[in-house]
Length: 308
Image 1 (spheres, one colour):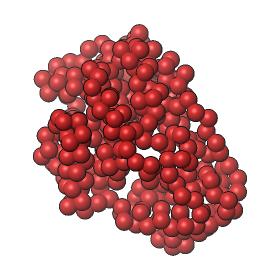
Image 2: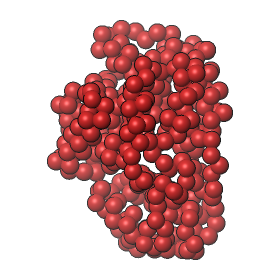
Image 3: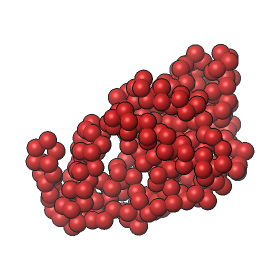
């Protein structure tokens, strides 16, 4: 193996719990044994950079070291500290955790997980939602539940935040499910003590990821500014330091734009990777970094390291 472009890996969760029904069908939380093997492989075969080092090398226009890799986590799930961090500590591997401070220390769950929980746990055989016209969802079988989750998620990612929020309210009412952190262990989010504990480690960096995982381009300009400002103020208040790292919620091409980048720079953010798949040349713009979503939607770890 020999590659020259930086590969930034994006994890969400590392789990040692058994999923029930369709919970975690997407592979967002990978199994602990798989994670250990992956990090051990990277430790033995790659130069693992912190995101501080990525930013510094890029700004100084320096070349990447041999087989460069950076490890990141999005969202702020509880298993980041309870399962992933001990492995990273054991193997002495740096990582950056991009979190949503508006969710930390609560029993709330992310809106995408609300969709999954409602459909996974409902006793209803079908329900209807107004998604620019009334649509019926059949949810009797395992596959029909997965299909329904995917369809509703995809629709919600392409409408305004207000319309998305109304759809989720309607979904909760139609399925008669109260989606919260008790629905599945993998939905649980870190406490502020957890976040501060990670921040105290020399191996780990804390970054922002919006306040509650609203997609930036589905909000108006005032909402975007307020979202970024509030998230960074909460992080600074709890960590007693200014955060200079961030990642875009969802992070695809249509989820951020030049206005979002300008606001991040206004708050002195130095580096903000996307979730667009690919590796990065040394000349890459630090606000257009690409990442590989590990495990998510069956993206294979081995396949990533067979590229270039």
